[in-house]
Image 1: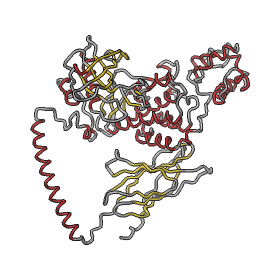
Image 2: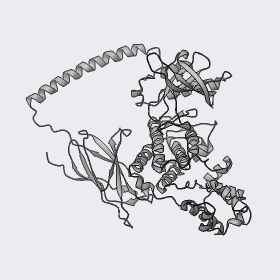
Image 3: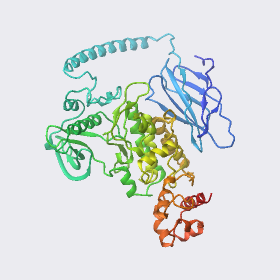
Image 4: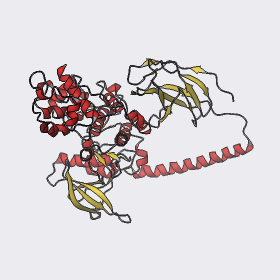
Amino acid sequence: MGPAPQRTAPAVWVAVGHAAPVTVSQFILTQRDDSSLSVSWLAPRQRSRTSVEYEVMFFEKGEEARYTVKHLLEPNVTLRDLQPDTAYLLRVRSITPLGPGPYSPEQEFRTLPPDTGALSGGVIVSIIFGVLLFIGLLLGLLIFRRKQAHRRQARPDYNTSGFDREKVWLKPYVDLQPYDDPSRGVLEFTKELDVSCVTMENVIGEGEFGEVYRGSLRLPGKECIVVAIKTLKSTYSDSQWWNFLREATIMGQFNHPNIVRLEGVVTKRRPMMIITEYMENGALDTFLRENEAKFSPVQLVSMLQGIASGMTYLSEHNYVHRDLAARNILVTHSLQCKVSDFGLSRILENDAEGTYETKGGKIPIRWTAPEAIAHRIFTSASDVWSFGIVMWEVLSFGDKPYGNMTNQEVMKSLEDGYRLPPPVDCPSILYELMKSCWSHDRIRRPHFQEIRAQLQHFISSPQLLRPVADFDPRVTLRLPSCSGSDGIPYRSIPEWLESIRMKRYISNFRTAGLDTMESILELTAEDLKQMGVSLPGHQKRILCSIQGFKE
């Protein structure tokens, strides 16, 4: 079978770095057969001599969740081991030292049908045997399904089981809302544990519903394991009881290495319990603050990549978290990060927008997208905004987003286009990714699967993490409403140092006898070095900020 004639597809756009998209040549199908596609495109014209790489994402039409990403040095790709007579969708983007641009629009290509030439006798016998085997399996499946249908007649009309987790991804998660009796709904998706198997040891925190314990779980025939135990306080209200059961129901439908695993529940005894795997290093924000500057950029990106993987899993199930923050990420002894705390989570409606709207309820302002604050509209895109804030928390080793700004100041500054400045020594390519997550237009924000792929690329190409983001002295963590006198936007040196994430040097300035903002205006790099500010990046940030006062 010779190669098919070349075909020309419509023109596409590929973005270079983070600049506006530039026109590139058309995709060209150079060759295809029943199991492969070869596609090429012309490299965009570059104003500089910077190197350009390419990233191709492709998947079978209708199977977007099962995508594959290839990294290329040349503007062409050959996709192999494909299904015959099947449509595949491709997306392409360029990657420069500035970072990746957005993916191009999807382009569709189809493999050829399988060769239908003469078949040998052995092949014919194999086909007949395969058909007979298929018919036998089909009859067995029909009998099995008929038996299962009889068993489910008294149950709600959901074609899933709490422990058939390999199948759950095929449909959105089920909420407790349709159940008249929430405790009955919980048993659909969780495992009721005998309270005698659970041992509570010491209190490790205070949850929304009650105390959280470290404990152990010993199931019959299994080894004893360490667990975390969420309890429902004895003075619970009806709404707290409902939300407690609802969180257990949500967790019982998850099965992903980057989402905290539910071991089971205790609902028939008091106190009611939610038992999960135990995470040795606790909450991510506290863990990072206790280990400031101890991890390399690659290690930090690996943590973020794990969080992005968990969020990709949720978004592919039309699920929105609504409270994604470093405090709700738990860390194992091996630094694996897992998404936790589903108290604010909601199932998205199965519509084109995939939104969830609420008239009230708690909203974590510092982590929430503008459209969710203003209109109570939540999507996976609003979770992407929150992920950008989590990135900032991780790269700043657990600092508080927006410093000491009030929630009202945060909301006003976001409306004015303000965005958090890069953390100290933050790789520029990661700050660019943060800013793309904070696009005011939610449609322009990347999807979680794209974020996950980018972070994986950074891990495999650590040289991309070397350039550090420039600090803009005009962008701080303080609003002009907090300004001092003489045009200096701070009332004290500690306030100023905190705003540029240099509060670690407050004592250095005090020891040097500098106690007013006016006293720091003539500082030089040599002065800072003598004061103990020895890191060049930290000197540059402080001097850039001082220079900003003079301009």
